[in-house]
Amino acid sequence: MRARAITHATPAESIGERVRATGKRMTVQRRLVLEALQQAKHHTTAEEIASRIRRQYPQIDPSTVYRNLEALEELGLVTHTHFEDRVTRWHLADAHRHGHLICRSCGAELEVPMSLLEPLAAKLRAKHGFVADLAHSAVVGVCSACASVSSR
Amino acid sequence: MRARAITHATPAESIGERVRATGKRMTVQRRLVLEALQQAKHHTTAEEIASRIRRQYPQIDPSTVYRNLEALEELGLVTHTHFEDRVTRWHLADAHRHGHLICRSCGAELEVPMSLLEPLAAKLRAKHGFVADLAHSAVVGVCSACASVSSR
DNA sequence: GCGGTTATCGCAACCAGCCGCAATAGCGGG
DNA sequence: CCCGCTATTGCGGCTGGTTGCGATAACCGC
Ligand SMILES: [Mn+2]
Ligand SMILES: [Mn+2]
Ligand SMILES: [Zn+2]
Ligand SMILES: [Zn+2]
Image (cartoon, rainbow over all chains, first blue to last red):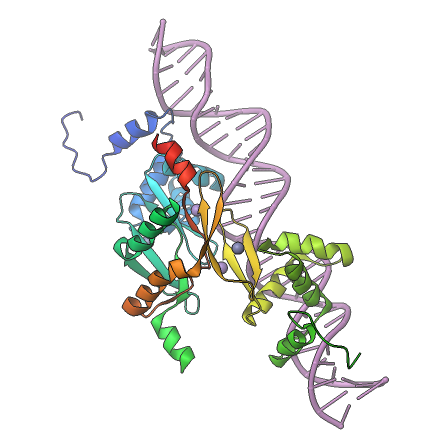
C-alpha cells in the first residue's frame, strides 16, 4: 500500500491529515459526505448528498450531513452558494470558482467567470475596506430570453 | 369625508385602487400588513410584521402575512432582500433602494448606494443581456474591522 | 343594497436547515 | 493493544417559510 502511486486529484489520505491537524476527526460519515461531493460533478444539495450516502449507510441523519458540510467548509475544503429557491448548493472548494446568475422568471442558471465580478469586489474593498465574497449568493435578475419576451 | 384633503405620503385609497385594478382584493389583513410595513421605518421581518398585527388582530396567521407580502410584491409595492441568516427582510418599494454588505464574522450591516453596484449590473446587461437585481441579496464578506483583526 | 363569483383566509402539514442532548466512537498517549 | 478524552453522531424538537384545502368574505353587476 505504502508504495502505491497516488494519482487521484485529491489524495484521500492528505485530506484525512488535514482534518485531523485541526483537532477534527475523520469519521465514516464525513468521508461519505466528501465522496458524495466528489461524485457530484458540480454543485449539489444537502438532500442529494444525504440520499446518495443513504444507499451505503442508511442510518445517516440529515443533521449529520449539514454539520459535516459546515465542518468541511471551516477547513476550506467545501463552499456553498445560495440560489433563489431556499435550497443551499454545495461545491468542493477546489472546483473552479464562478459566479451564478439566476433568472427569476424562468429559473435559468448562467455561470460567469469571477473576473466579471472582481471589479465590484475591488471597489468595495477600496471604498469600504469590505472583502466581498461575490460567489456566495447567486445574482438574481431576468435573463435575456425572458427580458425580451416581457418587453415585447 | 369626501372633501377631506389627503396629505399622507402614500394615499391609502390609491393603493386600494391599485390593488383592485389587478383583480386583487383589499382585505383587512392586507391593509394591516401594509400599515405594519409603513410603521417599520426600514427593513423588517415577516415575524415582526405578524406580531405587530397580532396586537390589533390576534387571529392573523403567519401564512397570511407571507402571502400578502408576496401579493404586494407582485404589485410592485413591496420588495424583499436576503441577508445571511435565513430570515428575509421586507421593504416598502418606495423606500430608497440600496445595496447591503453584511459581515460574516461580526454580522455588521452596511448600506451602499445602488450607484456603486450599477456598473456591474451594466456589465451583466451588456455581456449577457441579464437584467440583474443587485439589491436582492446582501453581499456577504468580511468588514474592514474584522479583516484587520484576522490579518494581524 | 343583494347575490354570485372567486380571491383570500386560517389551519394543518410539510420542507430546508439548525440546535441541545445523551450515547458513541475517533484519536493520541502510554 | 488498551484507555481516556472529547468530537461527532442520531434523535427530537424548533424556526422561517411554503402549500393544499375547505370556509369566508371582497368585489362587481344588477
Ligand atoms: Mn428572494
Ligand atoms: Mn451562506
Ligand atoms: Zn456552480
Ligand atoms: Zn435595508
